[in-house]
Structures are given as C-alpha cells and as structure tokens.
Image (tube, rainbow, N blue to C red; front, side, top):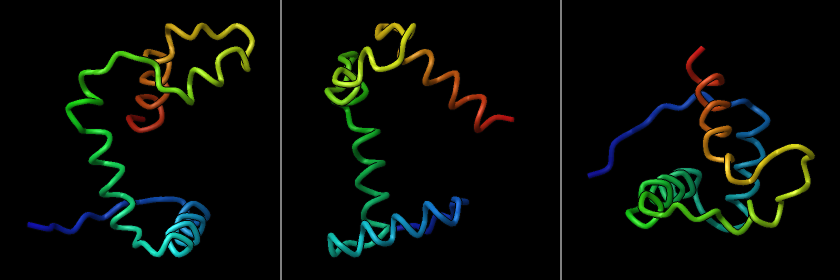
Length: 83
C-alpha cells in the first residue's frame, strides 16, 4: 500500500533532484523510495563495513579517523535535525 509523505527540503536540492530524476526517466518518489529501501535493508543494517565511497575519501580530511566515521556522522545528523 502506498502512502503519501510530506518532506521539507531546500528548493535548490529539489530542483537538482528533479533534473537528476528526469535524466534517468524516474520520479522523485521512486528515487526517495529506492533510497529508503537501501537505508533500511537488512544488509545495510547488519553491515559494519565502511562503504566503498567512504573508504575512497579516507585521508582527504586531515585529522579525521576513518574508524569513527559512523559516530561523527550520527552526531552531525542529530545536531542538524534535532535542534
């Protein structure tokens, strides 16, 4: 069963997402759903492995330890969304 979801997103991000979706002949809804499915998949929840893109970026920021990336990310997201 499909249900509507209202999101508040910056206008510029929405415009970019629309262009991205149009190039791929997809809807914004299908992109968001695919992202949520990936985020909540059992494989993603069970995995403690560092994603390949994160591994590639390791060392680009001086002083950042790769083994603490999850905690730092969670802290930033918490501060951003729970003000």
